[in-house]
Amino acid sequence: MTPFERAVRAEIYSLFAGGTFEVDAEQLAQSRGWDRHEVQESLESLEAQHRISLVAGTHRVLMAHPFASLDSGYQAHIDTRSWFANCAWDALAIVALLGNGNGRATGRELDIDWSIEDGRVSPNGIVHLLVPARQFWDDIGFT
Amino acid sequence: MTRWLEATGSQRGYVASAQTMYDLSVDWYAGRMAEAWIPPDATEAEAIFGAHDLTGEFWRLTGG
Image (tube, rainbow over all chains, first blue to last red; front, top):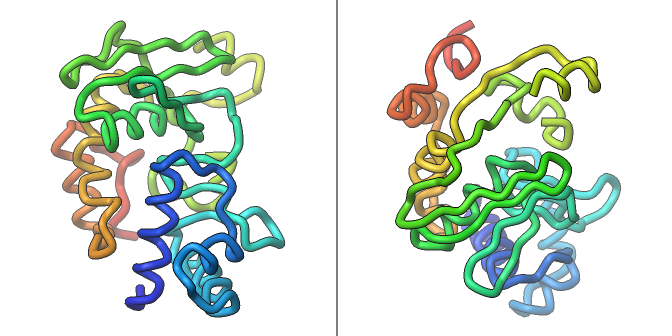
């Protein structure tokens, strides 16, 4: 990553962590006073490097793992705040990233409701990963 | 899970405990928010997986 790409990536993560779910080139450019075209190029480069995923044909961030921009049914909850997650792993990961060991990971479709207290998950359910690690980014949306 | 696999026509992949995936996340996402974050290469990523007993072909990133 170039220094500018690093800055763009960090700003994306900061916005998601702060509760912003719609992050695009225009918003990134405005928030930091960056040139929009440079931001667009950086987003495309970051996607090519598998650092983020963009909504097809746009410069809107779809995923910045573990954060999701859309409601997939999985969420992380810390105190009174909630975030969209891409999957059960990502829901747990958001708590790990932001919750200092405490939070909840939920999954609507499969009735998942895991509590994380001091880093302990209860009940200790299972996570099923369909796609092997080296193929994660073949189709990250499917993964 | 069996019902989900049958309903979606999917083959069983890797099953890990939620605790394992949480513990993995602590290491996997460490430093992720920082501008200076350096993504792990394939060898480093495998080491992170391995530290949580996530090994074998499913978790292999190196080699042909």
